[in-house]
Length: 134
Image 1: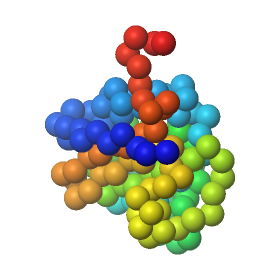
Image 2: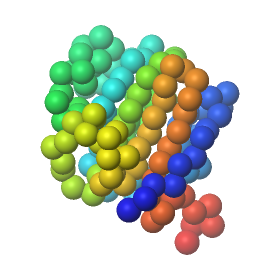
Image 3: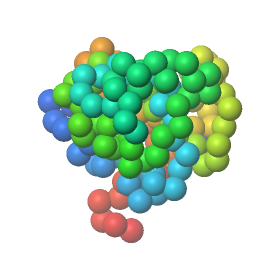
Image 4: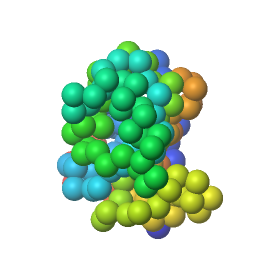
């Protein structure tokens, strides 16, 4: 299933832009993984940012996270230098290099933020936000 990619504006709030692209109700039902993380702000689950970043770096198949945790992490971040999160319809055991090589084949949603300057969201057509609510 090919992803539809959207380049987003880093001048606006990360989460508000994410909600403009991805249907948040459908995204909640997916299995999410943090694949890369470098942020300024707060960690999750009682982890400091350095500990969370270390957990992500040392997770060979991605750090499992809920949609709510991802949204909270993005809302609380003072700055996101690098972040890659992928969503799947079921649990997967695949590493980031393999996903990148395959063009993120098998991912329902991909969120990429690089060097605090590039923000892209790719999503399968059925997960694209429909502002009309249909």
